Amino acid sequence: MTLSHGRPYLAIPGPSVVPDRVLQAMHQPAPNIYGGALADTVRSIITDLKTVVRTQHQATIYIANGHGVWEAALANVLSRGDKVLVLATGLFGLGWANMAERLGAEVEILDYGNRSDIDLAQAEAVLRADTEGRIKAVMAVHVDTSTSVRNDIPALRAVMDRTGHDALLMVDCIASLGVERFEMDAWGVDVAVAASQKGIMVPPGLGFVFFNDKADAAREKVDLVSYYWDWRPRAQPEDFYQYFAGTAPTHHIFALREALDMLVHEEGVEAAWARHAKLAQAVWAAFDIWGARGPAELNIADADKRSHAVTAVRIGAPEGTALRDWVSEKAGVTLGIGIGMAPPGDPAWHGFFRIGHMGHVNAHMLLGVLGVIEAGMDALGIEHGDGALSAAARVVASA
Ligand SMILES: *Cc1c(COP(=O)(O)O)cnc(C)c1O
Image 1 (tube, protein in one colour):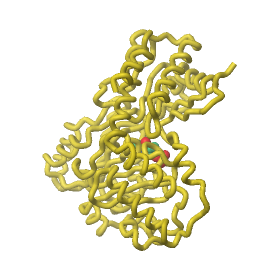
Image 2 (cartoon, rainbow, N blue to C red):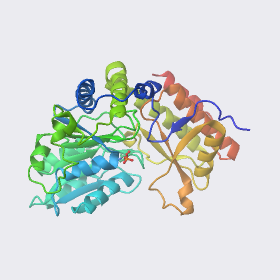
Image 3 (tube, rainbow, N blue to C red):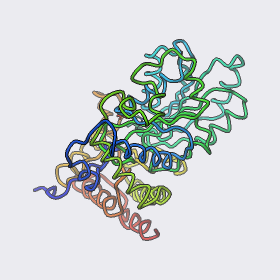
Image 4 (cartoon, rainbow, N blue to C red):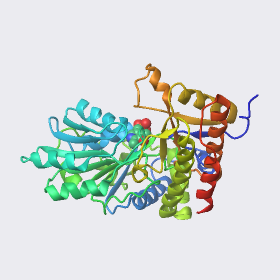
């Protein structure tokens, strides 16, 4: 028997749940792409994106996924042979580093593995040793979605300021934008990248690059910048056809307008941060109790370093895959696979899963996910402590 018929829940860390209102906003005839209402909508979106990322500087939109804006950001600030320092705390940091290398940069990686945030002292030592200022950019991921670690970006900025190093600070906030506190200007971030399909609640297909004047000054001198990835036309929405280097992503624009209405004008960005924090605490409360007697364990031990967008869980192989399969087939919930924890093909790969709780997620959805995880552990004979669902409910009750 299956109890999966009903509304499915894709509880993976992106693409996230698309609100019905956002889907409905896309359900309309194609508009004129040469100006008029669509151009006005894009201008209003740029204003709201700046509110979400907390910047007075430039917000640009690309027709691209996260990988696309990774490349866009690098292409505007680097020349071939320039050196970058990547502070990697999971698969996404390593992926961005790989892209920089493929573009022709010289890449130094400080790899902190799968269970840790950035070791700032080590980063400081590397910056201090760079007396010739060869490092043009420091690249970090705010929330690495593979490990569910959250890095302390203001503390990283403070380290850079203390060393007096002039490198740009580039941050991937693809998983965290609209979910966790992120303050581009106040934190001294020079370039930030994000995408539509996580906390922003829009289907995959739009990427965002935010940059300040210091980053734009670097753009003046570099040789990697190309026609499509050039951010300059995207800082001038008046020339609407050039803005997207061709046809505008019409229906994604409708979707994004609706999603930003929900996030910025109805709930409010700070309230969304608080909602995600509370829901994440409910998840952790459940795992604290399950894990007290059984194999389930949160990947990031220190609660202060855990993301509010996604939770990576270690449970041992083959239980991780078995549990994901069970909740999918029996309960209508799709959990995320573990990525970057063990190589695909290695039996250990089956020992992990992730819960995405970013974007259009509320208390009943999350308590439902926790409930079916417990049911799955019971059905599969995976040992766990008792009372986890009550503990999660108490967190929700405290809201
Ligand atoms: C999802 C994600 C990416 C990659 O985004 P794509 O749209 O899949 O290219 C990069 N970085 C982080 C932190 C992410 O969560």
